[in-house]
Every structure is written in structure tokens, then in C-alpha cells.
Image 1 (cartoon, one colour):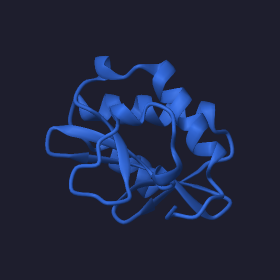
Image 2 (cartoon, helix red, strand yellow; image 1 turned 45 degrees about the vertical axis):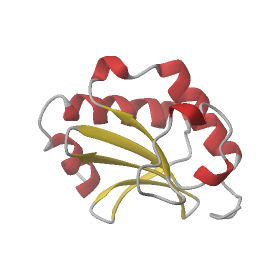
Image 3 (cartoon, helix red, strand yellow; image 1 turned 120 degrees about the vertical axis):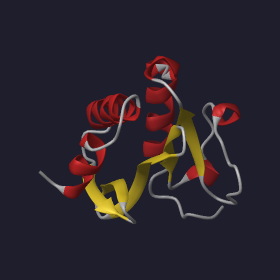
Image 4 (cartoon, helix red, strand yellow; image 1 turned 60 degrees about the vertical axis):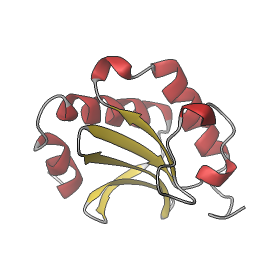
Length: 119
């Protein structure tokens, strides 16, 4: 098992379930992602470039997007708290995850994956 999967499986509930669900939706929606363990968190890459990350922090899980400056779908639902460039979807329970919104954001992020980090 790779370190990213260990990170996910070693989290306490409800965070483990949230991370496992996000992992499955990401990998079913964006089939060419590669799960790595970078910056001490699970980080998805596409063709060697960062795509998104999952991070359990405090009482939530962040699904952060690398090309966040270019995202256009559901940005009103994203958190930018104390970050200039990164945006994330934040979840405190499995029930908060709306798969339709999640998939639309993932598809949007995939469509801008080759744009520069900054606008």
C-alpha cells in the first residue's frame, strides 16, 4: 500500500469515510490521475503535474484544487480561507458531499489542468 492510501486509512471517522468517498469519485471521474503522497498528504497528479489534494485538518477534510484560479463551477461553495491562490471544497461529514457538484468541479478542474497556477 502506498503512503497516500495509508494516510487515508489511518484517519479517524468520519474523515476516513469522507476521504475514501472522495478518492473513489475522483478516480472514477478523472481516470488518468495518479495518487501520490506529497507534502505529507494525498495529492493527485496528471502527467506529472499537480491536480488536487485531500487534507484532513481540524474537524474537516479539504479537497483542494491546484488550478483554482481558473475554476468557474461552484466557486461560491469553495473555501479560500487564508489562502491567496488555492480553493477547496470542505467537508465535515459524508452526508455533506453532493456528488453532482463534486463531479462538476472535478470536470471543471480537469478542463483547466494545463493552465498556469496563476491567472
